[in-house]
Each structure stands twice: as structure tokens, then as C-alpha cells.
Amino acid sequence: MTDLLLDTLMEIERHVARRGWDQRPQLFALARTRDLVASEPEFAASLGLAADGLPDAALTPVEQDPLPDGPLDESLGQIAWPQEVAGCALVQEVVVLPPEVEQALPRHAHVLDWASEHPERREARLAVAVLRDGSRACAVRLRATGSEEDEEEDALLVGDDLVPNLAEALLATLD
Image (cartoon, rainbow, N blue to C red; front, side, top):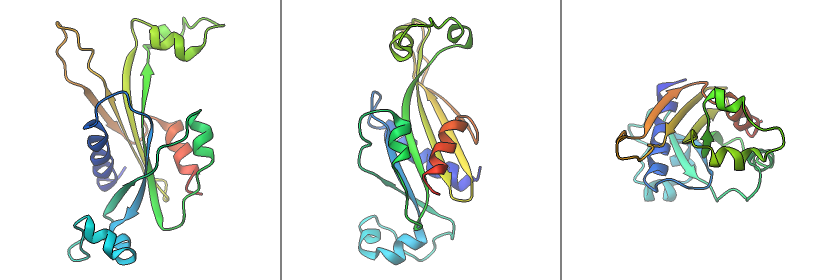
């Protein structure tokens, strides 16, 4: 995980967080800022970007149209980025359960409904960014529980391999 990729991912996560919770998955293209300024000078100017003083590896996230309804893996399977795209990022909300609860999953239950109603569930926002060279950065923000005795803020975990399957699925869109 590079600091630059993690910084870009954190910028994306903060952007999404400003809109609050209960959002649909959001996809971002990652463009090399220097290339973006050169190929799209009017667009770059509208963002306040100039070629002077830019680090060679600087990245600019470009939010994409909403993903279609349906399973995320099917949506990602339909995506192919042009070579000009250096990488991509996805932010998605999920429900997480403690491992001991997952082991008690009833065999004939609809997993999502069962997990969404479980009293020990936690909501989380996953943010994953990948580059064509295989670099990756991940962040998981656990939603505060909101109870009066529990006034914690949303907890944030970062790393390069927190959500390996999602990172691999995003890398596949760059092939």
C-alpha cells in the first residue's frame, strides 16, 4: 500500500462520509492527475488543477454513475476501464457479524435478511482502491452504535488487505 493510494482512498471515503450512511455502492475511476491535466485541460481547470508542481504519481478520483441494482459481483463483472484509468475505488456499506454469530447462521435463512436483523450486527463502510500495478489500500469504517451509553465515534481501520476479495474483483476490472 502506498501512502499516495491510501491518501486518495481516505479522500474518497471522507467525500462519501459527508453524505452520511445508508448509501448505495459508489465507484470511482483513479486518474493520474498529470495525465488528466494534459488530456482534459478544461476539466482540470474546473477542478482547480494545474500541471505545475504536481507529483508524478498524484491521483485524482472521478466519481462514476451509480452502479445498477443487483449483486455487486455482477455489476463489477461488466466493468472494463480504458488504459488511461490508473486504478479504481469502490465504497460500499455492509453488515458485519462477530465470528461466533456467523457460525450460528441457519442453513435455510436468507443470509442478508438474517444478518440485517441480528442484534449483534454492525454496519460498516468498506472503501477499497486498487492500481493497475496491483497496489491496494483498504479502509473499513464501523458505524457507531448510537446508544446513549455508547457515544463512540465511527471507528476506522486501514490496511492493504482488509477486504481481499473485493480488491481482487476491482483489480479484475482493470485487466
